[in-house]
Each structure stands twice: as structure tokens, then as C-alpha cells.
Amino acid sequence: MFDNLSQKLDKAFQVLKGHGKITEINVAETLKEVRRALLDADVNFKIAKEFTVRVKEKALGQKVLTSLQPGQLLIKIVKDELTELMGAASVGVNLEGKPSVILMAGLQGSGKTTFTGKLALHLKKKHGKNNPLLVACDVYRPAAIDQLGVVAAQVGASIYEDREQKDPVQIARAALAYAAKEKHDLVLIDTAGRLAVDAALMDEIKALHQAVNPSETLFVVDAMTGQDAVNTAKAFNDLLNFDGVVLTKLDGDTRGGAALSIKSVVNKPIKFIGTGEKMEALDVFYPERMADRILGMGDVVSLVERAQEQFDHEQARKINKKIAKNQFGFDDFLAQIKQVKKMGNMKDLMGMIPGVGKMVKDVDIDDNAFQGIEVIIGSMTPKERAQPKLLNHSRKTRIANGSGTSLQEVNQLIKQFEQMSKMMKMMQGGKGRQMMQMLQNMK
Image (tube, rainbow, N blue to C red; front, side, top):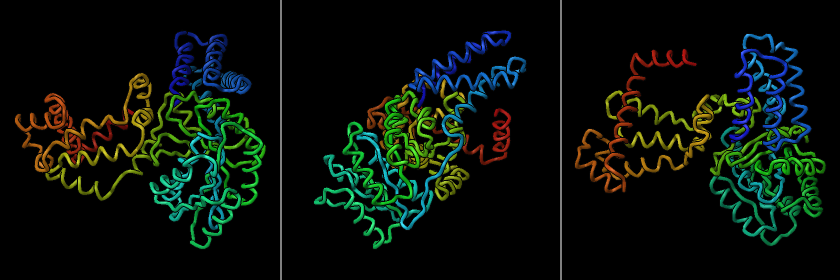
């Protein structure tokens, strides 16, 4: 996410680090590189120029040139301006009404249907909307209704469909009546998209919007389309006056221009970002956290929040008891791995750790990184998984053959497992507090 932009901004700030003395000339040179980085990220030229002008004014106003740490102060000003550019603060979704009605709008291929499912799951977990209804109002795209049905099943939601009716307005009205009757507390309406903005699409979405009077209208846009996304957002906003923007596919090779420009153009907040294909891969958008990540500062808060969402207290209690009795086994190790996998894209997670993002920027980290470990553990007998000390040379050889791996890989996994077991045991003892104190000091 924003890897290219992050690298170019980092390169821009290297200009300052290469000078013994900070002058207005090399600050201007740095900001020229910042503007170039923004333009390369497909940010609108006018927005990029205004951005660097504001940064320069603040830099001179805060006496960056005479500061003890001019480089760091300039980075802070850039971070603050990036935060402001993306909306300053997070804006929640409006869930007024019984049921709450949310309408999705956007072009074909933007990810509306998948996002509809992700939002249903998010609102179930975070806002207690336990009985969501997904409404299939895309009557044009082949298999659109089937896709929404699959998504609904994945997130435990109901679906309203009418394959005979070809008028989306009539489908939506009937769905609202059905939702009231069946006591659904949330209605999410998935609408049709087109390959480009056209009159027929705009008339239809406008009529649908007027008919259902949603508490929230969200414009869903593919982040990888850059300035085209911003132009499309403007066209839809002029018609619908939508409430917020959703940027999908931010886990892809996106330049970031849409995220940085869209708020300035339509003056509507980015509310959610899609960060992967899994139904859990949806994040509330926090401008300040995103600015931190763009500047390579990581995003520890979001990382901790994701970890807490997947944290199983009952499982943790059982594992702690096993550790205390030296009974921690490979099944427990596997359970920990599964929890980590649920947190999302591995490279994205590592990018949330300050300093690590730069280290892994050129490293290909596959989401199947744990697959080899899982296969090796799967080749062990239940007794071996429960009692790792049983793993002698002949057993390891059998496991390597059964998993299609080498004896060296099996030994490496066992070594990692033993190190993790020792560390967890240490954390339970008196040394745990010492380690936490060391980590705090390092921070």
C-alpha cells in the first residue's frame, strides 16, 4: 500500500540529511521532490502544488531552518498536511433508522458487491447489527445475484432477490417492506455499475436513491484507478451528494492518488478502505494513521486493534495453562498461526510495524507463507503434535517425506517452535516484566 509514494518521499527527505546546514534553498529542493512524488502517485497537479506551498509556509513560519532537528520538524509538517489532505479525522457511518439503510454506488468492477458483504460483517461485529439484509439491485451483470448470495452466506447475512423483476427501484421498495416485516436491523443495497459514467446509470441510481432515502450513501471506488476515480467520484457526488467514500483494493499496486486527492475534490470523507479479498479485510479509514504509514512510520494502533479482534480469550487461557505445565504443543502453535492469518495480508501487517515497512518493500511476502509450516505439522501424528519431545531422527525423516519437505526444513520448524515456547515461558515468569520494560525503553 503506497509503497512507491513512501519510497519517493523518503528519498525527498534524504536531500535534507545530506546537508550540514539547512537553508531555504535545500528546503525548497526537498519540497520540489515531495511535489514530484505526489504527482507520480497520480495526485492532481493543483492539489500537489497547493500542498507543497502550505508546507513551505508552515516550515518557514515554524522556523524550521533554525530548529535543532529541521529534518524531523519538516517531516512532521508534511505528516500533518497529509493528514489534513485526507480528511483530518475519521468519520463514522450513519446508522439512523429502523432498519438502517445503506446504499452502495460506483462503477462496474469497483468491488461494491464484496464491500457490501464486508460492511455487513463489520457492522455486525462493531455496531451490533446482527440481522443484516443484503439487497440485490444489480439486474444487469450476469451472476451478480449469485455473487451477492455467496457473499451473504460468508458473513451470515440474509439476501433479498427477485430474479423476475427488472426494475431496481421496485426491488428496493419491496426489500424495505420485507426488512420491516422480518425485523432486519440493517439493509445494504448493492446496485449495478457500468464501465463508464453514462446517463442511464445516473438516472437509475438517482431514482433508487430517492426511493429508499438511505441513512448513508457510500461511493465505492477502486483505488488503483487514480485520478479517474476522483473524476468519477465528482460526477456521482454532483448527482447523489453521497455521504462518504470507500477505497477498495488498497492492497494492490496502487499509487495512492485517489486517497490523497478525493477529499479535496468532493469534500466528502473516506470512511472505509478494503485491504484484501477476505471478508475481514476492511478497515475504518484514519487519515493520521495513513499519513504515518505513507511516511514509513508504521501504524501500531491499527496492528494492535487487528490483533485484539482476533484474540480468543478462552484459547489464550488454555494455552497459558499448558505453557505453565510444559504442555505447549504443535496444535497450539498451529492455532496461534491461524489467528495471525485472520489479521490480514502479511506484507500489510509488517508495514504497520515502524521501520519494518522499508525493510520488506522489495520482499515478496506471500499470504501462503505459513503453508509449509501447516503441511509439516499436518504430517505429524496427534501424539507427536502433543509431545514434541518424541520427535527423534526417524520420526523427523518420516514427517519430511510425508510433507514433501526436507529434513532441514523440519528441523528448522522444530527449532522455531522451541524458541517460541521458551519465550512464552519467559513471558509468564518474572522476566516477562523485564522484557516489557526493555521494549518500552526501545520504543
